[in-house]
Amino acid sequence: MYKYEEICELIQLVGSTGVASVEIEHAGSRVRIEGAPSRVVAVEASPVHPSGTVPAAIPVPAAGSGAETGTALGEEEELHYLTSPIVGTFYRAPNPDADPYVRVGDFVEQGKTLCIVEAMKLMNEIECDVSGTIVKVLPENAQPVEYGEHLFAIRQG
View 1 (cartoon, rainbow, N blue to C red):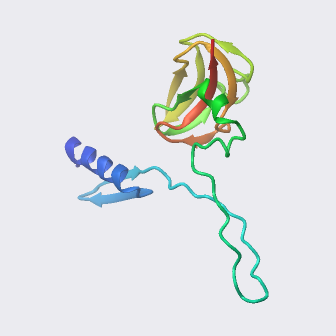
View 2 (cartoon, one colour):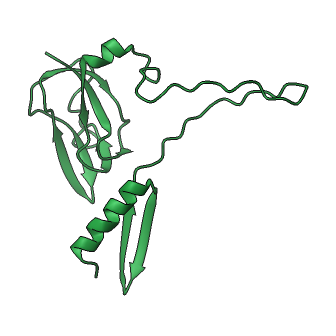
View 3 (tube, rainbow, N blue to C red):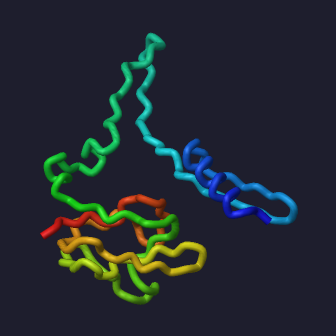
């Protein structure tokens, strides 16, 4: 059996190294720690010129530049992002047959439940931390989410 301090140390180590996951089995007990997935940027391959040279590299926008979302930086500054407090599976509704807690365009008050993040078979209701209008729901329903990942874009007011 692992001690609490050992598990915390492993979590910190995995988080600081960028490793995707670690699974350790020792003396009949097993621990698996999932790290943050590495960010993969897909770039369309450039054709090779008949001379055998490859054209100049295609510039890839930096993360957070607004290029990925198609919004200007000025628009993003006005938005508040509700982030996931835990690693788990994102659900928009309390059960598969129910309507989502919120939709884009809905006005929400601080404290309203916006979604559920399931972690280790526990359903954690995630509440809004500001009042405002839902501008975008970022993850797809039943998609895995990481700690700190943006779940909702909210325009305060």
